[in-house]
Image 1 (spheres, rainbow, N blue to C red):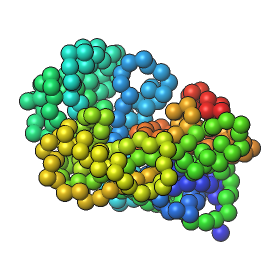
Image 2 (tube, rainbow, N blue to C red; image 1 turned 135 degrees about the horizontal axis):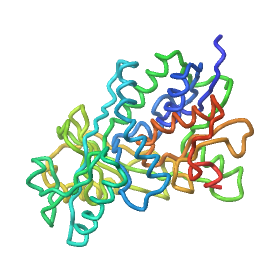
Image 3 (cartoon, one colour; image 1 turned 60 degrees about the vertical axis):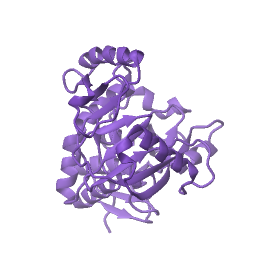
Image 4 (cartoon, helix red, strand yellow; image 1 turned 180 degrees about the horizontal axis):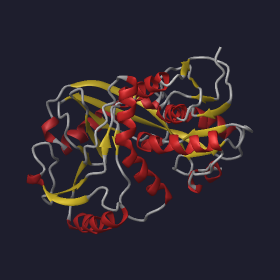
Length: 346
């Protein structure tokens, strides 16, 4: 029986990104998850990899920028190793502007994007008619177009990432004995377990509901309108989401809130009015109290590590998360931003 150097508890995108980074550095890894690969929030349907706005710069935004710029090579390597599609595309994003105040703010961000993104991506205003047929209506006739946003098919990408880990000699099991350095990447339920070990809330789960339509726009940009993401996937479907529910009774059931989301989506993008709904999804994303990913040494289990709290930006953060966690686990190097350390959520 092979002895693992690293055991990752959790087969979502964050856990698998850590396993992948460690395996690429030569470590023998195993991943344990009784729910299987993509059994939680990483098995969702939306997959919008969208940057924070280019202003009020901080460590979280800088980390996300670097991770988004790493994503093309990361997902290409995953696809090559696994032989599976990930649905990744640096597609860019379009956002309508509702009024003069929104236009003024967007123009200011054009300048800050030039300064902060350092020519690696652009944020610009364009007329609606220059965006092509797959574009949202805009009351001002203007859209923001950025070239940093990307998209991924969450289920496909997570399964491909698992395949890449296996291709590098890793093992993925429903149940096994942890060996070596243990990393807890157990999503929202893992955060609840941490709450029980502390005298205040460390993190929680936020439920989201999303739709999948039969509406092919493969290769087109994602759209962000009325706080909804419209993500055209490589398989000819269009994902729309999502709700954000702090309180919920059932973590994986859909309800009337999804009907309201559909109405909002059609109001924002009237061309979708007659597109058939092919799937409805609900799941719970892990949100650390600090709202940043929680990365580093586990505060309550000596000698182990934690990688959790990706919330809505887990897929965008995954390439960089894997690398900084591998730095810590395998080499003892502290490259994690202070704002991401578990102490920030305690």
